[in-house]
Image 1 (tube, one colour):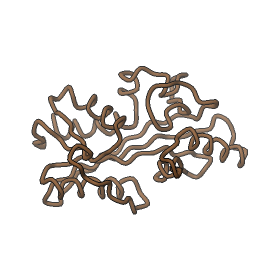
Image 2 (cartoon, rainbow, N blue to C red; image 1 turned 180 degrees about the horizontal axis):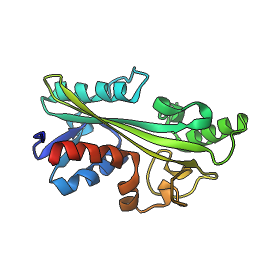
Image 3 (tube, rainbow, N blue to C red; image 1 turned 135 degrees about the vertical axis):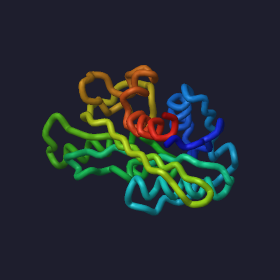
Length: 202
């Protein structure tokens, strides 16, 4: 049974790159996305140790604050040789006193693999959990992933986050070397959105 979302959907993010990606994914369905930042909402503290837990915090906070359905995603890269790290702490690995530095985070990730002499290919997965929440406290959860391997040195100037060091399965380009429309069909976020669209629009 389809879920009525309406023409505008609040996306609980302050990340412009993520908002742009979500807007692209929902545009074919006539849905306009607006960000939590455009409402002046603060970023809630992410205190859970799972993707779904942190996505729920963000989605429910935005829905409660605005009275609108709100969509949040929590995503990250999980490296097999690092027992799934950085995982839910992907953004934390990029934190510096001056803000997030993903070049530093990617370097730290590669150096951690070197420290444990991780075999090649260095397998990893991007994972995404979407939570669609309503002001009454109900929600729906959709999970996606994109398996692949790490690349070094970093390559490409497209995308955001860890995209320059991730090569998806059956490809030789990093996410950051791909045209946005190509990445948008095979990414972890696209996988999760296919499940959301199947539930909400078909």
